[in-house]
Image (cartoon, rainbow, N blue to C red; front, side):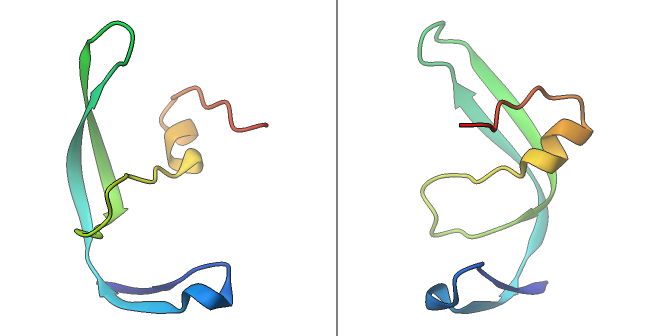
Amino acid sequence: MVDVSAFLSTFGQVWSVPIVSAALAFDHPYTYETFILVIHQALHFPTMEHALLNPNQLQLNDVEVHDCP
């Protein structure tokens, strides 16, 4: 468990967020392939509809990330 706060003070703080290892299914919109993404040390917010992946963790695991606008 961890207490987290956003970079904007208007979002406030969330207490006792579980840190988990999780698997997510991603359906590619053009090829219709399904990929299983295994993520370790992720914050678990059961009410969130979209997953937020940390680009630093992705790059550390040799995943190419295009994070420049």
